[in-house]
Image (cartoon, rainbow, N blue to C red; front, side, top):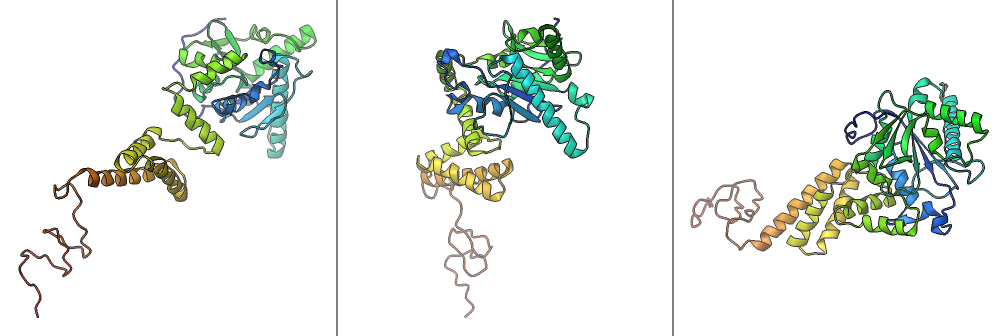
Amino acid sequence: MTQDPEPPPPAAGPPDRPYAALVLAGGGARRLGGADKPAVTVGGRPLLDRVLTACADAAATVVVGPRRPTYRPVLWAREEPPGGGPLAAVQAGLDALASSAHQGAAQAGAAADSPAVERDPVLVVSADLPFLSPSTVRTLVAVPDGYEGTIVHDGRDQSLLAAYRVEPLRRELALLHIEYGTVSSLPLRMVLQGLMLHRVTAPSVTAAALDCDTWDDIATARARIREHETVLDEWISAVKAELGVELDVDTSGLLDLARDAAHGVARPAAPLTTFLVGYAAAQAGGSPQDVARAAEAATRLARRWADETEAPPGNGTADPPRNTHGVENTHGVENTRGSENTDPSENTDDR
């Protein structure tokens, strides 16, 4: 297979065209002592949920494996026979996608197997990839023209960290069925041999290839997400998923607010203030702009509070006393007569 010069990763945002996702969550996890690997947690979240978060913008998602709770709705399928290997799982996933497309098309009165749908990519990933990210997914599903798939290559092809065009993938599975009578127990690499693949080698993408086959792998993943450079992003992602919040969070802005509240008021003010900002933003509508406005207002308050604490009286940094009658007060004493008093000794009464 040839490989063209690697294009830059797609910019942040939704993919240019729809894609489906197949997540393989079967297997016996023998090296984990038979543990339910998709349910093992990394960063407080099941491995399967972490993968489903990375491909949350898929038009349809099929999980091939035993049913289990997931943080978002998915379609379910089982390979035949159960435990029949990744090729059988891919076949079951494609069949489930086709069935779902037919049902949706019948309800809409449209054709399910249009050429455009067959040319769209399907993301194929395993459920044990704790560092699969939306940006990696976008890179994979942006299959270049002239290629039938995009695959991560970190010294070897990662066939369960790839995106394939549906029609060529079906073609290769059909050829294997003709040759072997079944795809059960066949290695997934056999389907790759007939596909024109674009291989991605960028370190930012190959980092997602760290899978969790052993307990040592799990320990490594758990330690990695707690590294200083990534721990806050990992924690925020986990909290958002746990609470069902689909909102881009300005982490640096909220941290600045928490710092100002802790420094200018008291340390316990930091978490209480950020909670109130979130509550106020939710009452206002809950958009990113609502969060930003609430955070800015609280930041201004915290800074005013700090200014009063740090500045000695009378140095000119404090706000002037409030004039309730809308007339400028030039002496720092409230003028209740409705006109400017330029001489403190002058009596302006006309009695």
